[in-house]
Length: 231
Image (tube, rainbow, N blue to C red):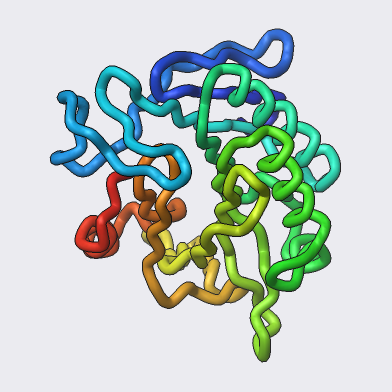
C-alpha cells in the first residue's frame, strides 16, 4: 500500500469495506483449513466458543492497514478496525505483520522493542481484545531476546479477556540475494529466528501461526497440521 492510506476489514464470510473515505473494499479471502474440517456440517472445536458447524460458522476478520513510523497512529487504526470487525460479527481478528510500526530504518525499529509480557503495544492490544470481547492475532512486533541485541519478530495472540494465549516467533527470516549480486536483504541481521511451531485453540478452531516468508516452507505447515491446526 505504498503511497496510500487504505485500511480494510475483510471477513471470511463477507467484505468489511474501507476504513477511510475513498479506499475501496476488497473481496474477502477464505481461511485455509485442514480438509476434514471444511464446511459440510461437521462440528469443529473451539476455545471458549464451543463447537461450530457449517450452519453456524465463526467469522474471522483479516485486518489490512498501512503502518507508519508512528506507534500511536497505528494503534488507533488497529483499534478502529477491531471495532468494525466486532460489529461485523467476527470472533477473531488478525492484524498484519508490523502492524504497530513501519519505520524508516532499523534504529527506529529497535527504539520500540518491548520486553516479553509488558509494554505499551502489548497492553494496548490486550485492552482492544478485552473491550471488544474478541480474540486478536496481533500481527508481529519486535520483542526483546535476552542475550541478543536483535529482537524476535513475535506474533502474540490474545483471548477475549485480553490475556495472552500464545506467542509465535517468525521462524523463516527473509535472507535473499537478487540475481546479479546488485542487491540483497538480510532479515536475520536484525531479528532472531523462532525455534518452534505454535498452535492455539480459538473460537474459530485451532490456529497454526505463521508469518510472511514462512509460506515458502511447506514442512512447517505439515507439522502444524500434524499438531491439529485447522486454520
